[in-house]
Length: 186
Image 1 (cartoon, helix red, strand yellow):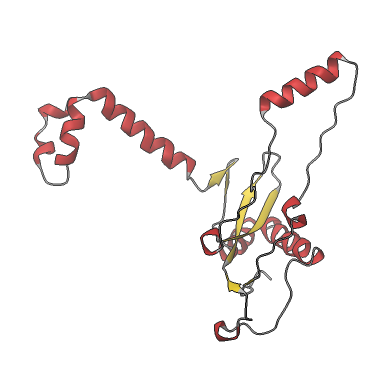
Image 2 (cartoon, one colour):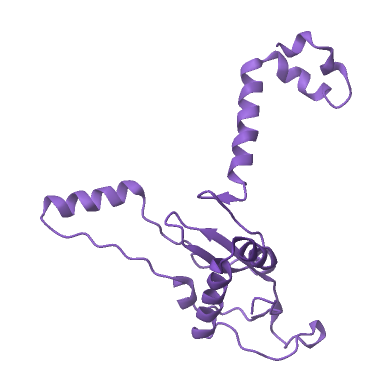
């Protein structure tokens, strides 16, 4: 069906598509971009539905009859506690924020890894913090770099080992003083 033969494009709401419909290739490309954007923001990963917040994670665990997401949340909050990331100052009140501190919000992001491990990560809403002047780059090895290292190890008769540093960002100290209100996951 060619859109230019259809009277639908003359109705309000559809008129903005009329110039694009004349160029069929451009229209098809726009549709593919929308589908791709929708796929990228899909709440599924590795075939699992990924919760948007802690309440939804508890609901998913209850529905699935397991505790994978609540365990991942407990692991994350335990690691935050082990690294002394937060200091408990008691009852939260916006009027009692200590001088020199900035109030920010934090939330959990959930992920399901390719090996079906469930992961919870506590992150700050970065629009509430100042932009750091230092480098904020976190290097990740590329697939090409990994292949090259494995090739060189094999070529030289060496063993290749891999590791993952869990919560490496907790080692990074910050000069910024911030406070948060602990939510139910704490």
